[in-house]
Image 1 (cartoon, rainbow, N blue to C red):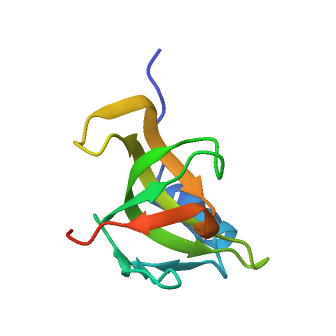
Image 2: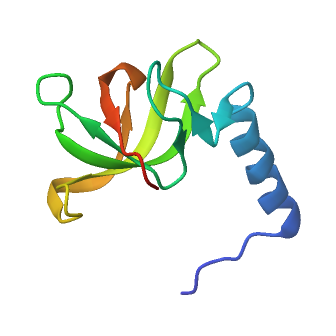
Length: 106
């Protein structure tokens, strides 16, 4: 028995529900940590041991602010300085205050 395809109207309803769930969220392609270089998509930043559950270099994706006021950094990592993946490499959401330093070059 084959899987039933959704109609165009059903797909539109699903899309409306998804958009409503994220209404009020702010997604910024850049973030400026205090006293550091600005984070832009693809720029790497370092998270020091003891500040977070993961340590190493991460690749910035976007800065997100929820309607409740919580903010976090969407990123991919961790990596070593020479761009070798470490254990647990994947997509992560980190608090902005765990950023230790930002790489000068993109």
